[in-house]
Length: 107
Image 1 (cartoon, rainbow, N blue to C red):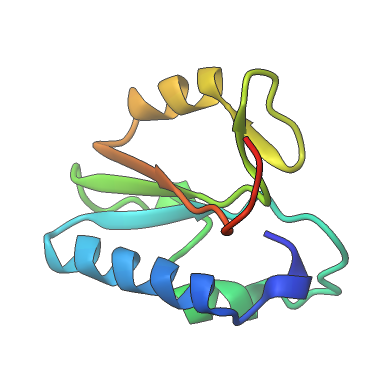
Image 2 (cartoon, rainbow, N blue to C red; image 1 turned 180 degrees about the vertical axis):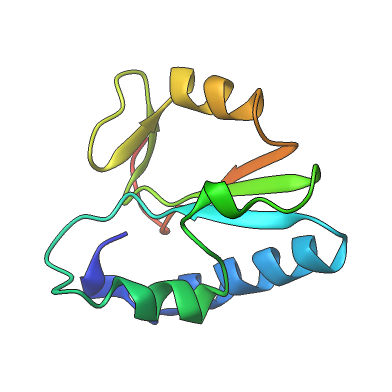
């Protein structure tokens, strides 16, 4: 997640999905994969989306993870991509793993 896009419509979609999962009994955690300069404002993003970045606070066996790379998925991963291996690894820990992607992003 890059601060340039903070508060855009994609963040509202993320909030919608997180709230829907919570209404179904999931504890939702986010890995925002932060890029750019946040200057200590990360907590504003967590509050907007309505989730915690701290998986240690898991209070339910029903858990979901939102991965928020800037540009999607690729084989290697990196600061702006999540790798296929990472998705598989996280899927073994969480019941639901989902990610966001901006329109026009490349994978």
